[in-house]
Length: 276
Image 1 (tube, rainbow, N blue to C red):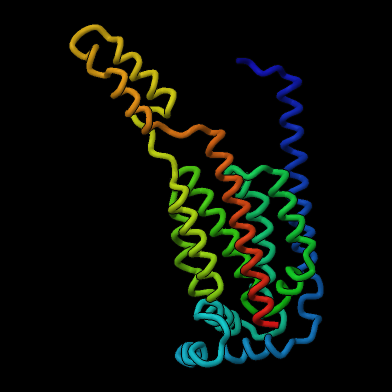
Image 2: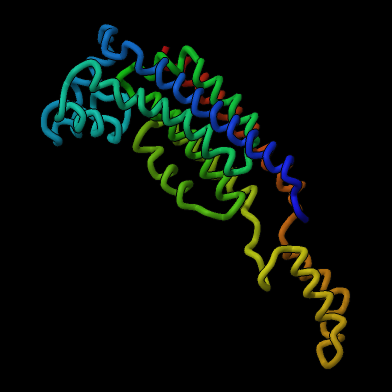
């Protein structure tokens, strides 16, 4: 089917407008997070995190056991940054960059994994303008990086459920307990969702469900010895192994996204209650 030229031009214009809106929102997010980043005074918690990440590598590991509130990953990153420069800007640049990258993942990665562009833009807009997100982005602690990893875990889960790819999901689940203890609970929820909603089975005989059924029909009506092999009961059982419908999988992914977001909301509320 040939697409008319006016429809094609309108589609290209819509794609360009969407890309421009995404880039503008990303620039706004970066401006809000890096604006006057070194100007604010260093808080007590920031100073404690920076001091516990100084010295030799063995001292940082020892401080992680008794003094730091987070596992080893963020203190090591802060230790590496302070080896280059130890200023208010340098100790805050990692959380600020992670917060901007979180918005970028929402805008450019989630739509490729089946999330509607409008939903991804709304989520990125809320994250961009969130006062708490901006405050944590200018805080020399690990909370902005936690948010980034939570979004990557969600993206990895969606990627696994859609295409069966496990790379991003496995890497994010591996990093979760090394970055923040609260992410372990979120990781358990993600693994539970991956078990309850497995990915679609691989395509058989060179195609998906419809192609598989059509090949079964051709084999069943082919003259010769194989004509009566695939009778109705066998064909019905084999069709049970074909790929599920797109509508049913989309509905389940929609409920899964809602559940993941709600679990993250509950986790954030519990974390705020504990630390405040």
